[in-house]
Amino acid sequence: RHVTAVSFVLAYHQRQPGPRPDTVVVVGGDVDVGFSPAADVLVIENEENFYRYLQMLNFSSEALGIPLTLANCDVVLGGGNRITQASSLHWLAGYQKVYCAFDYDMGGLQMFATMARALGEKACFVQPSKWSPWLGRFRMAPKNTERFTKAVSLAEDLGFVDLARAFRSTGKFMEQEMILDD
Image (tube, rainbow, N blue to C red; front, side):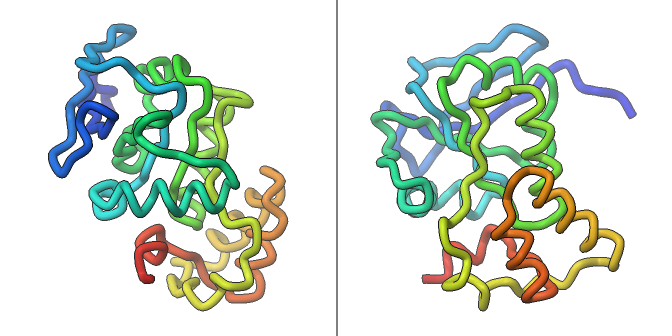
């Protein structure tokens, strides 16, 4: 495995409200950003949800209880673990808050844990305040029991007790795309 020296991160921002995102070029400690960053950033794990960033901003606003718009929050594509590379984390550290909208599964929790270690209190996991209305959307069966058990344990370790309860009561994970099923 070899870590690449260059990353390309897709971003929506106030001056680029879509549907075509802007590109941020991250080379080591240097970042080429063709826009003035907002105070905060919403990192969305997958492409479908990223493309529907307005819906994700609305969901995140509701979940967090604060208004997120392109006026105060850039939106970037996490692209799975790619956003957890040291150079990308260094760039994200320039934001006041980094809201993480990831899958509600082992992988999403591991990504958030990595970001929280690097960014400290700036990192915030986006999740509903009450999971009961969402339990029917937990449809992804874990690959194995060990992965499920680790996800429950990690959720608890991160302080996401209600998410751990949701895992236990459904026996499943929730993919981020389920947020779009309204």
